[in-house]
Length: 108
Image (cartoon, rainbow, N blue to C red; front, side):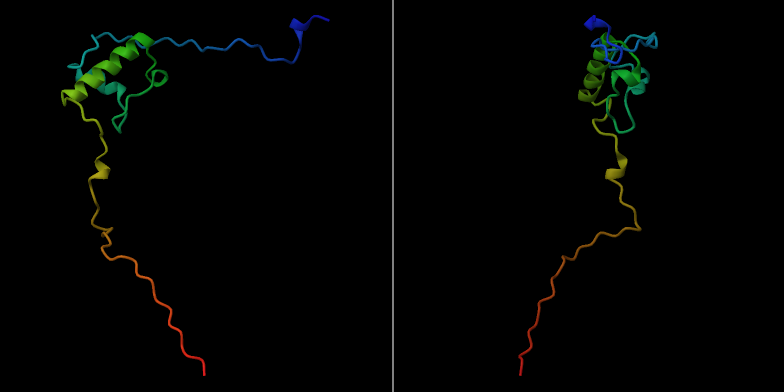
């Protein structure tokens, strides 16, 4: 029996899904904020290549452009406003927890 034609074994070749990348018509540059903002999540994180559907070379250029824009303070490093806003309905507790001391009564 030929070993290469086993009916229930997995092939060892990895399956790579081909995807057609979205054409980025503009020049990838740190000054092009409308283009760069498409590749950043709401929290300010750089989206992955799978989510962006771009090639490896384009993703590297996008990452470099985003980092340059952050250093030149054109983009924030973090974009979570909820961290700094505090609602009025949840007041901050200032008192520390106190443990009740056990009292032992004398047994008569």
